[in-house]
Length: 427
Image (cartoon, rainbow, N blue to C red; front, top):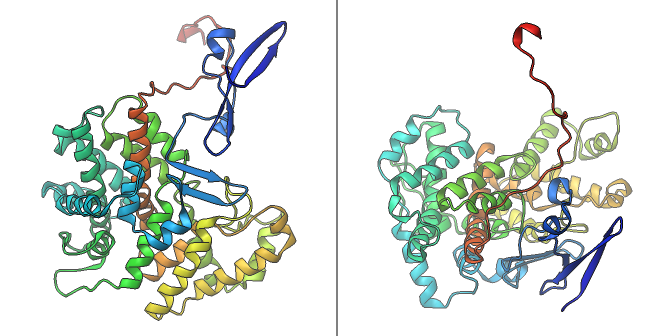
């Protein structure tokens, strides 16, 4: 028997197994605590609760480490592509050339949407948020493909995975095109995954569109950095929904909605809105930093700090260079970038922010890149969803491979005790 922990409650002592992960993380297994003692644990926000054992992603927040399937994010960002990283996350290992070629070919085959989706999007208001449109459209895929909805059938799962990865960029672009009144573009399967998405977003039928390789590389890099991040809110949502044995499309639709929230995927939108507000008010970066420090001011420094990373976000270090590459390539003189750079320099030297470990995170620079290539603010989170999709799928796939039972969190009831019912005439 391995290491155990003891929990003493009154005169009773309960022995609980201690589990250790491959990177030395340790956890007390309380799976049988309620059946043994009648007690549950209470952990609002699940900050100290492990919902599963996972082999997908490892994070060490103290050391600034992020690895997908054991590979450092720095190596993947430098040497890999988003499609290859998607394969790695979903299938567990880097593909050989034949496997990667077959995967890419399958994605190219599935990029088109059914023509009826044009009517689906056209029925939405012009100002519909792209995340609402993406969530609805992904859920609707289950109505178009009822032949591949069984989560425990390997072939059906394979087909659904490829369809979803291939079609989400098309779905997101349709949401954008509808909002600005432009015609929907068909995928161009001569292009790579990210190049095709840029074509779908920014091309029109009336003129040629050329994908800029620097922009394509930067967006590919952003998608890699966003591809998975352990048991965050949206990933946990996908797992919890998936545990009901619902199809992949429905589970991912729920994950998109979870990502939409400003506390989660909406953070990069908050950054660009902060920078725009600073520019419009004519403030200096120092003036805004002083505002953010003041207890009497509601201004907040967005894009700094992270719930997991305690010293630095390794993704921010990687994306900062890509941000400069894009702006230099496009010849963009960005007032927003100037403000962002000055904010970073001030915050990293200011004792107030240093003490609170508020350093730039991945959202800080990603919003500047999206803004520079002409992406509307409300599309930022939809592009995040495209990046996070392989991680969601990998976690959903792992859940079913482990045959994890349906998720059912407990609660501690604090409402009224039993009360007699009073007829309405007597109330």
